[in-house]
Image 1: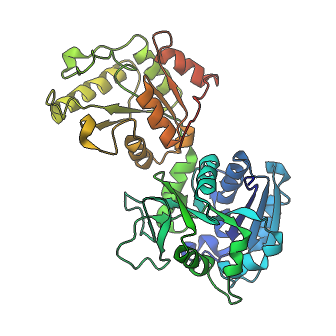
Image 2: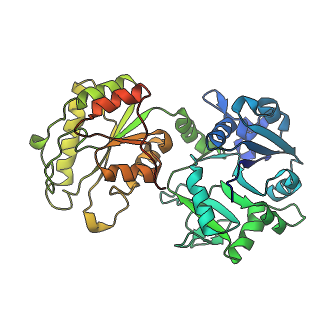
Length: 405
């Protein structure tokens, strides 16, 4: 199979929960930082290799059509299918079937998630199913669950009403579908997800691509401030601590007191430069010395307080520190090379990890960055943090190759 190059976006609803904003605007046209929400989706699709976008419209279609036209300004082809405002998602898709490719990506107009399509596609091809949805694991209880996924990545249950007790995960759209699945749609005015996905589940034909990266939406008023912060895309850098900011102790030894701390040459200068460039700096560090009794949590906090204070004295800034206190064998989700700390920071600062560099000093940092989707770079004996800082701000820092999701 060749990967799909057409995205179909459901964008026809009234968006009544967002009134009065939607009294004169369709929901996906609500502006953020000078452009409508839907434009961010179109740009992401283009950057991920999609050539054609089919917009399924209903409510105030002229507003969207007048803005996007044929899509040439964004380097894509945009087509439209306009149906009745009262049509549900199933009927809207069914009426546009003749315009839909044999294999396509189906999206909601009100969810933005920084898609890495190459990994979604790899999962789809490997699973051999006709349909695959993207599932936010929802470990932070961001919203109510509506799916259950087994250990092999197949959806065991799909409950659009979100009433069942054993659900774990949220369908956020970004579904890869074969057009043949549309044959499961009834002629009535039905919801696509409620009609088709349960049928696929019964046949073990609905796969799931799991993600821990939070999605952002224009579905309700209480999410708009998070979406606004996310789409502001304020520059942020992740830094490992030991070996990047300070001299790393010998193997199996740890900085347990401030007296053992030694800044690496150029590290404070790099922090100053990041501050001048209005970058947020977030430190991501494994600290198993706590689990091994070398230091207490309060001692680590004291070290980090003094680290941040000296950064300020040097006209720099460290905005936050995320640390893993666990030992190697504890099986936590936060210890690098796992990406748990990066996801914690993502949610805490509403970051787009695909736009956030992680600078570390060893393969665990690299692996954590790759799993989270962060571009990365490593310091070495020949390349310091200061060197990488100049390269990044001058647009000359090469991204490390991504080897796996």
